[in-house]
Length: 397
Image (cartoon, rainbow, N blue to C red; front, top):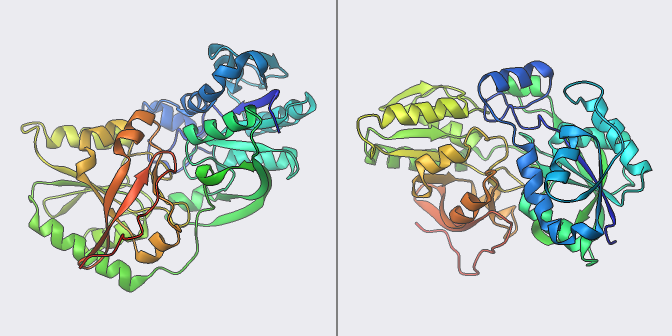
């Protein structure tokens, strides 16, 4: 297919709850809490990164969208020809507005709809379009378990560029899954299949469905925890540790004696849990306090990857926003993952989608991954899905 009319739907509030530590953005109350905490929505910025790949084709492409912040404003600012086919019914768009927009854009003759949002927005597209009309998700939510999203906004832009250039791009049906945010905030992960979307798929640019529900490799995780605790004991006791979400990181914190959170970000220093389930502003404040009298006091981030997808940064841990990552620095990143989790990637790199393409590029390269007790590998980290594991990559003892 070659694009002539591109549908555009932006969920302006997608992902706003992530940096606030709210584990989702569903519901007006959640949006209000995030905005009150000073969180700036990022979905327009992420959509702009993807659409920038189409600017060389702007004279030959028409953007079909809804008025205002659901797409019109951004498309005009990027220099595209715009056809506005509707508007949100209130001051803030709702899921119902998203569904109306999808139906109206399809009726207006769009070739494909690109949307910036998360799993909830993808569900709206399933409700409105079914599984026979092509769509592509630009990741802007918090969780994004579904397989309809590009691995990053820049990767989504590359898929769109290839479509615009008339290159051959496969179309396949991919699952849309969403999580119960109420259960998620209570520490329980429960995903549900909602349907399929027809998605343009090209190489490594599309993410996989998150691997959920498989049994935890308890012995492997225990070995990793023992190794990291040993390293922490050997490092400067004044180090501030930022623990990302996940059962593997929680196992390390539990081994240290801390009662951490499974799905949040926790802070540890000098043998004690400082704060649980913190937001991006709280992390930045903690780092500033930690370094108030000594700018060189060490800070480290301990992360594990999402099983199946391979995302290390940018899925479910948006509390680690670019300002946090820049304050800590790449050299202070500690990555842990079981060998099974790494093997399931099939040679695909770990992924970073921080919201800052320059940071993603600067952090790309090989990272040390602790896979067990005295076991580790070097593994590629990428912002665009490129990079393969060398044939001679081995686990070291």
